[in-house]
Image (cartoon, rainbow, N blue to C red):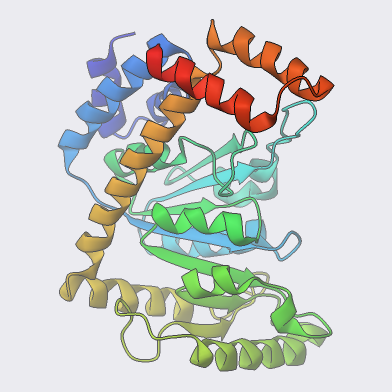
Length: 325
């Protein structure tokens, strides 16, 4: 593969080349990883930046419908939108349905939209391991906005905030104690809480839910990267396309304030350090999947299961072998 030529095609906005590039960075083969690193260095020369939006929400909240309505609105404004949708992988078979594209039928037909579903591959954090590199590729390809849709809501999914400029939490109106539906950790990460399905019979419930979360946000400690009145809760209707323009206005207000006050670039620098550390951890863990450590671990696991050796002793043996390798 001619990596430089592929990088040039990505920067030129070739969608097929962008798809090939993301496939390359998602590969776990050693030769592909070397090519992927070279590719990322080449596309980084473009210097392009997009607004990165992380989006999380419970299953059934209407994330795909929201993304399609929101994306179509932005395209009508002349913007280019990329969607990186991460599907959960089966812990038994390792497979994923990857059906997000079929749920965004209108958006997937737009020439100024790019939708890429990826398997989470049992990664914690609600995002595929190489989603961060896919984001950088979409930026280089000239997309103005990149939406990263995560697997779901939970404390582990907050890692999406480490690759996005703004983190959106999408919620649906529901009965009972609304505040029990979402972990405090993910609420503290959210820059904007959007209560979806604020239409028809659910509109009053959506307004109550929004008020509940607005009150809860006031109890959370103020963050230095937020202007007055942020983070905030709003109601939207993806089906009726109501509240989307107002939500987009709030996102721009927050992003502009952070740029003017130095928080935008500072956050991206901190994220680069975070992913540097993550790459080192993943690299060390991958060594455990190679021989002779792989066979050694399997043998020690059998001894641990039989009670011949303690887990701590076995782990110490593996770590010594890794150090000496």
